[in-house]
Length: 110
Image (cartoon, rainbow, N blue to C red; front, side, top):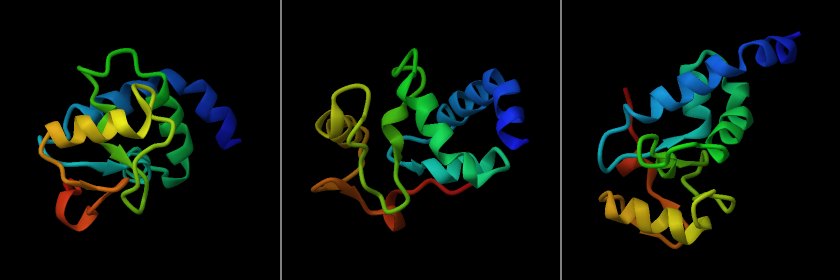
């Protein structure tokens, strides 16, 4: 039943994910689960990832600011893989060590 609801509301899900991305401040990151939780269902983390992978405008919607629950960058980052995401995060003031961000230091918390 939840899957059916997700399909019905897929446009709204996309809009909410993209709106959330615009609120992440300079020098901060969030997790897929964090976005899903803000939408009311932490189980939508994978759906959030799918929305981000189809991002129509990475400048307007900074999907590079999204990492996994342990701070690891996305191997499937749509705009250049891990290296592309790493460069964009560093340009944004986020320190990346290897393929990981320190969430205690850089995670955006509302």
